[in-house]
Length: 346
Image (cartoon, rainbow, N blue to C red; front, side, top):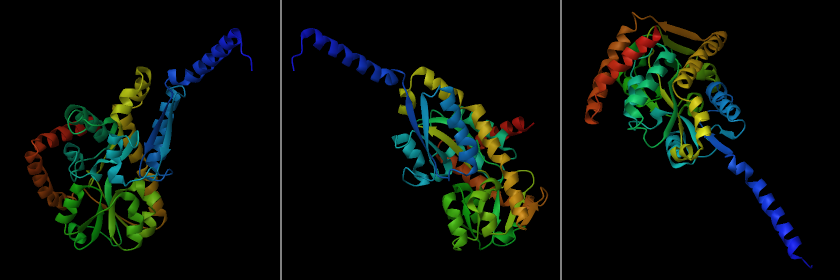
């Protein structure tokens, strides 16, 4: 084939143009983010919180950011490994229970102490403020946190009726965090650590007699079909867990400023309050489902809960002492969290 200089230059120009067009999406910084978490896609948090976040990010970026969602640990590993997956870049973004790595993020545990929380929105707002003040550049320095929140009131679901602390003696109960496990031990129960996706199998096989979770997640786990007794508390909740939506730091830093702004605008304080409130709002329908099944629901009055609260004091004392060994003023964190939650509950 005889290629003249003119035709060669013409072909070279066309090739350069084609390469330039091919590079256009890269110059526009199109980004695909992986979002990894432990619950089925149809569960409340993925459906009502994480998908909302991801959809808004995609929309506000004009389609330049795409969020691929991986529920039920589809990228591999176990729920306790999610934070390291975010830190190491195995996933770009993860949603996880902070307590799945006990003691690693100690300041967050202030919200997980028994009978601390009355309102999920107020607690989530307080959590974000205290995260920025105490945790962002210390405990969470290796990851970029997008949201911090708690769920609605945690409670007991068991294969027998639970009314008073003594009813817990001898029961094998799944606890969701280090502190709730400590409290279960103080009540005479045997705490069993397992991620929440394992609860259904644990109940159905009799590995556990009950579990501590909020109403909201019971439907996805079919808990009201597996055990028929539920114990909830008026006033302050038995416990809550802390959550984070966390992003790989290098991945966030690699984004152009306009796409960082999209992430920022959909994260932070308001998102945290939305997430915690949305989880709490999902408690009602799940409770109604248990009622419809004819389950037995025990509501412990604030007055009767005093015995339960008194039993929690050793947990507080031990936690404060443990924080002291880490150079953290645990009592100051309790006082600050209490003040902020009361302020934002008004």
